[in-house]
Image 1 (cartoon, helix red, strand yellow):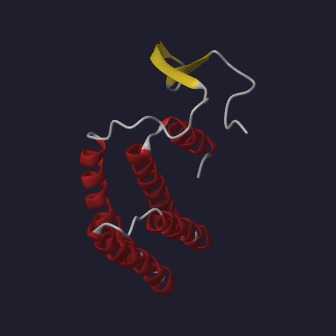
Image 2 (cartoon, rainbow, N blue to C red):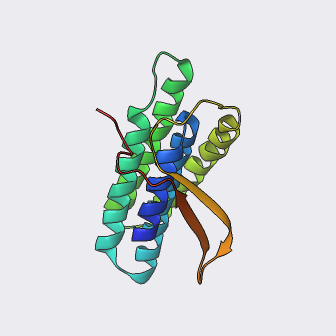
Length: 158
């Protein structure tokens, strides 16, 4: 994953509430799947395997976040395990077709979670974080983000 993507995901995580965090994890998963597909297309199998392993760990993170006191979590668990196992098959067969099956499945779940997130009005999980504002000031390649009130004591307070 590129440094810019990591910074973007880090910023989004610091600003996310519970529903938004799930969406960010899905976006990380899709970034790894895209990376695996690109490496496969270039014939770089080792990089493809590495990206698939990262994607599997991302699915493991989604599994660990499930609350099994709800019946829906049991169904999501089965879907996540199926998707993770398909990624293992893709590595075993050295074929990207199984990866595409997992990606299509996870995109359907992503769409459902995106709709559910619209109803989540909980506050951000992290407090005392730096506020980031994106405006109409454009840089050479992208929108410029401006951080105000830079505080050296931001982050977790102990």
